[in-house]
Image: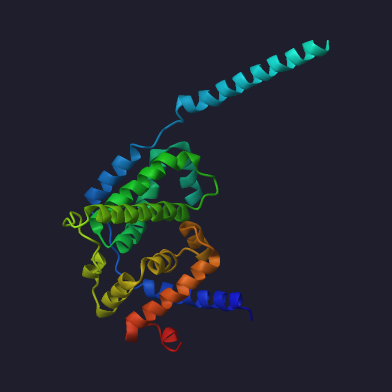
Amino acid sequence: MSRDDDLRDLADDDVRALRELAGGLPIDDVADADASRIAREARMHQTAAPPLARVLEPIAVALCATSVMGWALIKVLEVFS
Amino acid sequence: MEATWVEGLRRGDPAAFDAVFAAYRKRVFGYLVRMTRRRDIAEDLLQETFVMVARHGRSLRADTKLAAWLFTIAHRKFVSWTRAAAVRRQLAGDFPEREPAAPDRSPLEALADSQVQLALERAFAQLPDTYREVALLVGVEGLAPAEAAEVLGLRGDAVRQRLARARAHLATALGEHAPAAWRTR
């Protein structure tokens, strides 16, 4: 059995024993009033839709890049025509 | 259920945020209390964690595992707090500290209603941070070692090694309360 296998078996045993042990740990929670405040303040950062700038910016960049490449292509074709 | 919540977060649905907060607040708070050993700091970090959930919910992948994602954020918040506290201590120099250092005792010791529970809480509190975080994520939160590795940014074998060392520390600290299998090793 390799060292990795040893470690994996050890870890499986440790995981089982740790979970059994942890079942006996006391459980704590934030007070309901504090939890409501925390949720309310955090929820204020949730955006309902992506900001318009995040949608328009890539479209503008794509349009710009396409027109520059088109212009460059026309110039190259002019040289060879 | 989890897939529905992830879908809701991706849509920016406040009801999905509330459901995730209700389902996970106790677990994330418990992890943060045991890592910081301070309830006030744990409450602040809990809020910061859920602010990140609200901000970045839209960019979640549909197959995101919520528990692993939440504990990744909470872990990063804890690491940032630890670093900031170390800098503050260094800057304070000889001046008396304005912020009390984390005590050795866990605030959860007061909640223990038996000697075994108290011994267990103390044993976890005495673990070095690097072993405690692995023991909490895998033992208490039920994450698979591979998920814990992802949360902590470690390799799988590093997590398994830390688990084995956490077990050794806990076995010593628990003495007669340690599981029988651990006492025979």
